[in-house]
Image (cartoon, rainbow, N blue to C red):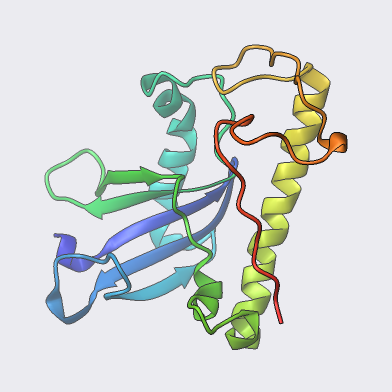
Amino acid sequence: RIVEGEVRIQMVGDSLFQIIHKKPTDGGMSAVGGVAEYTFYKPDAPEFKELIDQFISDIPNIMDNLGIGGEPLPILWTADFIPVDDHSMPYVVGEFNCSCVGISKFGAACGPDKDLSNVASADMAEGYRLTNLIGKKVRESLEDLKASGGFTAVGKKAPSVKHSFKQGPPPTNDLGRESTPLPARS
């Protein structure tokens, strides 16, 4: 039933931001790479209420089963669901994504000769709504981190930092990779 499309639940930390129905164009089998019709829904869309309620209540169990129970949720992440028959729920998870999640409404700014001036006003407003929520969740995460005394990716207290960023950029590979400066905008 993938030709019916997938339902993407876009999350910012523990907050549902929006629901995106991605239906493959021309009867295709994939909604990846922009070959899909996108329909955006608010978090309270009645047609997805059962799916959303079940998913939100299952997040702690999912985290436990992935071996990351007790860890913070990613700041921006998605869960993609595919419709199925003969199952306890009308959808099953196709994938979770937290490594390459785009801000859909800023898509018109993608490309070497494009920037945010290419984004329509309504899309700009929606993109800013998302990025503002991301900023809020980052701030909450930093406040939690400060209050807890710090943690690493596996939930242990972070070791002391040997290099102060007040001294200028760290030596090459001090952070495990070199940093690349952003190009200047004209």
